[in-house]
Image 1 (cartoon, helix red, strand yellow):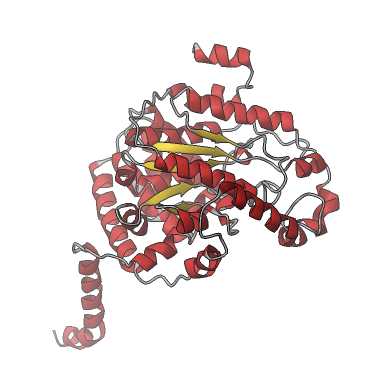
Image 2 (cartoon, one colour):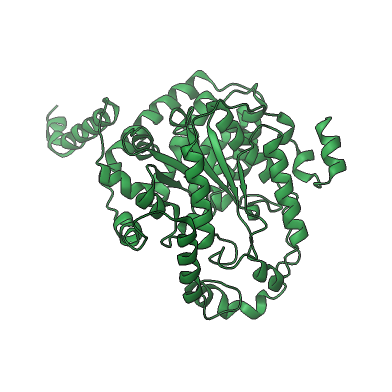
Length: 427
């Protein structure tokens, strides 16, 4: 007894601290964050915001500011003064909430959506597609793990249905990307093979989710961030006070002309100097064997469509172009690229997703693109107009009709010809 009494001063405070911490993470919390924090989070493009849910839910539930989820990848980082976040702050009554950066392809976006499904119900969203996602291997395990978060994984596992072809497909992809030894991968394997998780699994998931949700709420309030003040605010006053589409296009051309003087591709000077110039010689014809026609990404993308259809989300899809001068230099087969766009659009149209801004043929439009594969300047102005018109329209009842055959390898490998589409439609 005396020995135990002596140990208490050493271990007692630790035990009490652990118990208090457990209590803190299990007790109901009702935190709110400031409007300034939400403004910063909306343009942060950081992985913490992408992975978790508190800031996204707070923003999308905010009826005053009217945040709109913009799902995309590296193009969202091209923040000139015509970027959607700047244009919206100057002219529109909505605010983009940017979700994604380099490597954020379909599967990371699916899991990001998983944490905000109620916030997507019967509302509008923007989804930007890059045909470069659709390579032979699809998303790399490293890129997926970079964006993968425990909260999203456990949220999905909590309601994954082994009888659903969509959930079995997603479970197989989780096993492939996370590995069979990963704890999420192990549970996903059960779903993939058509088995429900055990009672113990569900109880463990519920407890872990509660901890993660509380952790997310606690630490989201204390994230230092000045992205809005640095990236967006200084550019707002550099736009005309009144919106005029033609004037904005002229300004965009003027900016681009001044900022593309050190190369023949129409690429932003700083991008060319830091990312292209030293490697230019070795990049000649470097893309002649690229192929976007056969990829698991097509079925991964189907999971995105499943999320939107489930919540009756009205979506504007944008398909990015490729810089034509750059494609010619690197030997990229533009016929192949246009065929990949055709395949993406077929998948959308066949299931009732008809609101598409297809800019695939704008790659030779002067100053439409900021670099080799990313929209900018004139492209942003045109896209902003399309988004503003989309947002101004009254909400329409969705009429999506998903087809599980888009999860099959046959679709992933299908050559997009009229004959093949006809045969596929009768499967």
